[in-house]
Image (cartoon, rainbow, N blue to C red; front, top):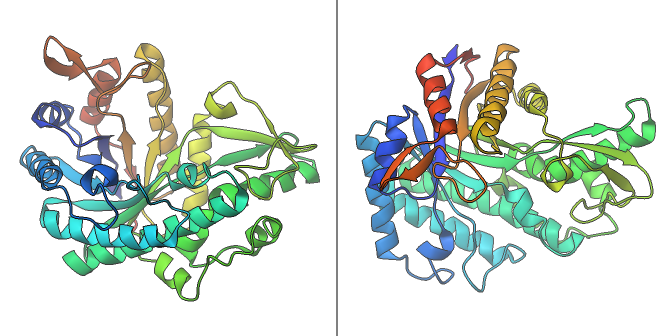
Length: 375
């Protein structure tokens, strides 16, 4: 059995953030770099000051006993976009250069963070599918580049924003078909190329009117399927759908006749911690040797934020107790913004734990549940 590891997430931390995060007792800190800031022009020189800032942050985290995890930011520089295959190729080159510059200061690497939301912001189904494929290609090229620089033992993962979808009527074949369509367009569009090295037939069939898939070239799916050492599972809530006149379509390619029943949460989602248990368990059933890390979106402020986080940690622990190979839980942001609680807040010129941060630190100190060892 393996003890669950705890992590925080945020931007590149300054020394005050490093000290405060270490005070929470977390095992790791995932910092997301900005590609556009690090490399303002595609394939141009890296910004030395930004590299120095990253290097200083990773070393400070190491000294504080916190493992630095670099998430390669896929906010493409001006003049580049994920609808363009060249962006994936430039991203792979960026990953190699950053890995070469930071080296062993980094404990693990994350190639993509929530790519579905980025890809399906595109205006049409064909453009969105091409962007999704190029993001998967960028993942594969980045993973290969990191390992080319640091060796085959380099720990490389990916974080996917995945969707839990339920039928409005569990006995309706039409509603079950609606779930399958959303699952294909929302989950397997990335799980397929990244973990299986293929796109499912269902996805290809339901999108035949949207794209001819000519953006997939020979050899691409060998590149997209690199060894994944850990899968970050980003979760916002669950969806309820039914077959009907439809309010689907973009961003749900091939699901024009799927109606989404609006929930009370952002984007019509239902706040459903049990959905995280369902998702982690389903992923473990499909990929039993793949270590999983829960990266749920924490919402609310004050007591409400603590209640939501507590329910999500319990859902993660429940999946582990059921046998899923869950390795960790990531909370963030480290420092909150307007309308959202981070783990830390400014107070009198210092960073102190919020109510959420105090609860998280106490949860870490209490000791982590154990889960099945994988990987």
